[in-house]
Length: 36
Length: 173
Image 1 (cartoon, rainbow over the protein chains, first blue to last red):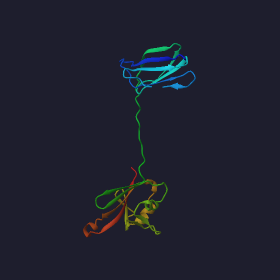
Image 2: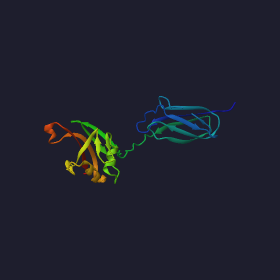
Image 3: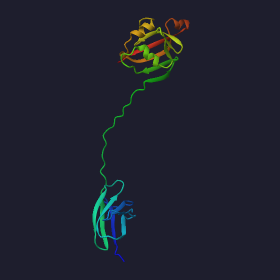
Image 4: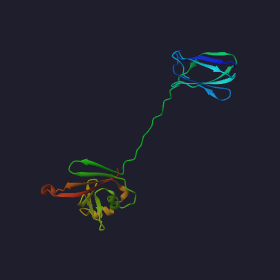
């Protein structure tokens, strides 16, 4: 079974450090396909 | 995917290791493009600061419009006022033909609203007396800014209650 990885993070407003809700996040895979 | 209530996000089942490009967008914030190297099972980017977009003050906008070639206004005393844009060097009688309700016959006699134009005034003063045809033929079109045609009581008609059609020509100021 192939090993998979996870990517996590947290978005905050730079000025007041409040969380950014509903931001669109997309990762482009090495083979140019993408996951959103 | 979109960030959750606490701003967090999670991508799982990333099969291939390598450099991933992370693109984060949100209304009112600058876009983030971030290169992420995935080489272990789990990668936590931690806190990602999102910077608000800087407002840009727009310069003033000037809106211009051209005056309609023909404009009619309903004003008292059964008077018709017409603003007309004339083509330079066209004789005035040609311009009168463009006005609704105005006709000029082959003899140069102008008729407005069914009544013959009896006189022409320029800035309120009679032009060529009561000879409207001569007045229309001798008025240079390029000096005409506005033409008004209306039924007007003449000085004598004010007593005799006779109506008189008068073409009123104004000069460009």
